[in-house]
Length: 556
Image 1 (cartoon, rainbow, N blue to C red):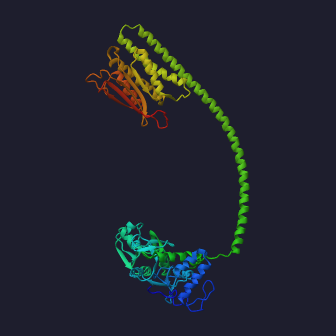
Image 2: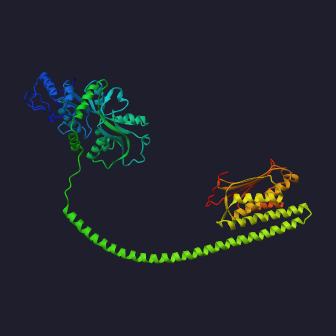
Image 3: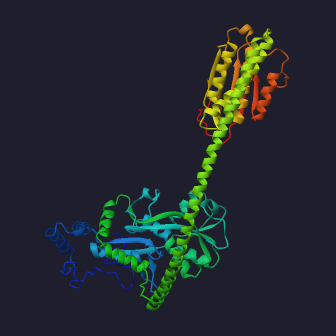
């Protein structure tokens, strides 16, 4: 295996050489001196496995697998703080160095870490150098030739812009700008996929941030941890802003396709590291909150201030309580006055309702007297034409009298059910004119007196017109009358299937009494009239219902 070293060779100080193979110089985890002979070492592992078949965290199986590996070479990025960094003396330090040192201690397999620029690291690994590549993102393209471990660190990938550049909030906004990226980085393929092709490639994240400090780079895409490290280190953190997060990556370890057994051995070794040790490594490089000792002077001042505040609040509370008691007493007095006034208002309202009912009752009685007088007068007339005139007037009076009667007998003095009102009018017309060809489909629509009375007169006028002219000599025929609501409007229609209008008669401008009454009443209720003489003759009136009315009628 190329480049295998007898110990973890990542710094000249050999801080992490846990496996010096000098006879008797160190002891293994079981306190037995290490022997230089590989054969004796394998026999020692075999004896240990036989004595402890169920060791904790699967270390027995790991030792058996690791015994077949003389050492491994790990290839990774050269500058990726806090995961991997160069010391002033040229050695390596960071989270990865400590993690691989712990892995070496758990497995007993020597580890050598080699660092290069990221593009060179990937190129060397593809040529067969090294056994494992670390700090690599798992992407579909790389899965064609690599096998990845589960991710062990989530890495945000932001895009940074100079503070003088605004208006960049998404990858689409980067088009037309030159973006600095690290050669071989997964962000390169992601930006190209999103249509950003003007890219300036650098060997490392450190070179990108250094170029930014020299004002050679204005926009760059660098993984979060090294970006924050170098921006603060070079003192340009106030000159650049994080525009948006391009994506969320994750660090994994990878081996070449077909070498899954090595990856399994490596993963079992990391699983054998105690979680407390991993947390300690992360705290060492990620840091932790500073310990805070209590500031007794501040606490004493706060306590004094709190005491004064409590005394002040107690005084305010006592004062408020007195004011609330006074206000409550005054409110009770006002409530008593309001209740007394409300009782008087209710009594006055009931008296007015009774008065209105009495008015409607008397108006209805007077109209019925007039209708009866007209009927008696019509019986003494010899002319059929004059008798029909009296009957028409009588039906109009009945329409008004019936409305007042409904208001008198109804518990609601404001509105009536126009559907029942129209049905009663049609029944009266059938009786008065001895015609039983009416077909009435009047659905519940609640109207007030200002709308219901004109509507009743319109129905009356159109029905009388159909009785007079649609069918000669009261020949059998049908007159359809409909009432419903639709789209916030009340729709009323009267239709016959008789002779229709004579030639030359325009109902929209005709000066006859019937058409004039229909047009005038429709205008009074802000309605629209439509006449149709294509098959018989029909009249349709539409007028708006007030928005505050809730009519239970179904839409027509």
